[in-house]
Image 1 (cartoon, rainbow, N blue to C red):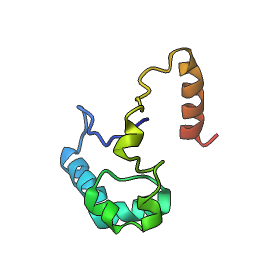
Image 2 (cartoon, rainbow, N blue to C red):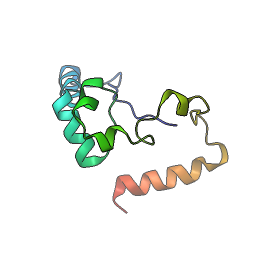
Image 3 (tube, rainbow, N blue to C red):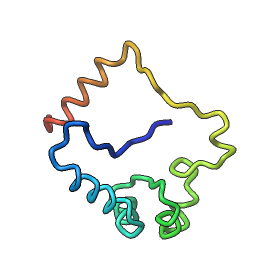
Image 4 (cartoon, rainbow, N blue to C red):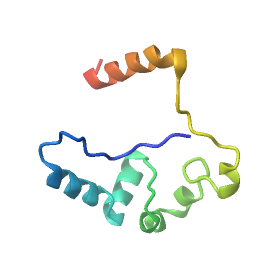
Length: 95
């Protein structure tokens, strides 16, 4: 398993705008659009209620408690870190 996070860096220059942005993307109606257009899941229960049943029933996107019993977070990629970094840099540069 993995998760993405919205964070505000310690040195952020416009913290108020960052909070407003996070508040915006977590609104159920906005998060629904993000889920439907981009495919991201949402932790917002109100958003999930707005999604089509086919999406809500997708156990890959929204696993059941039973599915999660044997799940674990990947916290360290070890020797694969240079590979992750290579492709992250390519993604950021559009190359």
